Length: 412
Image (tube, rainbow, N blue to C red; front, side, top):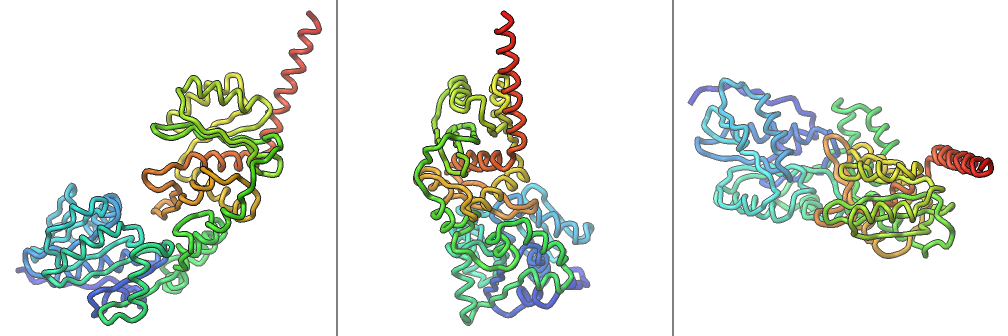
């Protein structure tokens, strides 16, 4: 085999200690952008370079795209003339004929059967527990070492429970925690960036992502206790603002009207053909109340059809940033008890809702297979409520139009 000179990348003390220790199991709860991925990359490459021909080592992420991201980063960091790679199957073969494979935990059954000599589990708090079981089985014959890294994400997941076992001093486990302050002190991220995140993110989201302090809400952005505090009977006042979430595939079309106090005064939920849905939305909303309707995808032509006679119903296009802004606005309103809603489907969906940190920010959605139509409609109504000036213009438009119509009739 060729003789190689390898120099470990520069890591700060906490970053290095999280990976380069003598324990078989090492668990690191780390805040976002604190260098846990870079530390893991250095560890798995070094373990591979010290390995024997034919040995395999794995990097396992919750989804394929995350595994591919790390594959590309390691590929770029190694000399291309000394390695073999496969961009579809995501493997890198090193000069000593050991192989690094990058796997997804989306289908745990696909992880069984191999003999793996060492492994990294990335974003462990978001990885399915069945995938962890499968990875552990691959290390049985080799007694391979494993490093588990991830953000804190509530208390009801396997990674949190294992981290507590390691923190309590299990003899075969190493535990470490890296928070934003550590990364700032090491020059990895700026204090200004952390301060900005503290300013714009809901408190419990910030505490999990930047201080590694788990919430009791399991990644719910609204707060389970805060959700309960806002439950109240359906208001008897007239709706003043509306939010409409339009059905997609097997979803529901949901309309929520808020009264002058921010309490739900009207709640509609159905699955009907589009033409019937259009007429119902126009009839229920009327022309006097400002409204937002989801205009994403199939919703765009629907909103356009409604606006021909009801310009008070505006389209709201969902993108990752716009949905994040929308849900964070609703989270603030719920935590301040500025909205109220009846018990039932709205509360069920609010309690099931969750956030997930990605490279581009926080992604807000219902868990796979569940609905978030009520949450979106409530968030749209609350958003519309927060922008009264636009609604005033719409009402002025309709008042002027009615006056002109009456004037025409008078002349006749």
